[in-house]
Length: 105
Image 1 (tube, rainbow, N blue to C red):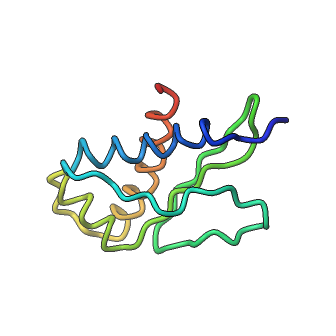
Image 2: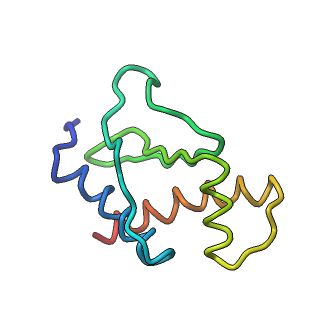
């Protein structure tokens, strides 16, 4: 199994930046892209989506966001339903969308 290098991590950073730029027309400010090899020391917010990675690399990609950010995403998507179930679905959907963007890179 290989370790991710800076170029490979940049694929995910670019996926986040492109996603938010397309949705909100504002670039994302990615401040904390790092490998968590300490058993869960990464910050965790109100909603998290986790995608399993297999193949040459094995592990998970976690996207975690505060409630306010997920609410803003729903508004940007023209979705007025702010129920907790919809917020959870949007958090998970964010992770899936970013993974899809990264796969297509």
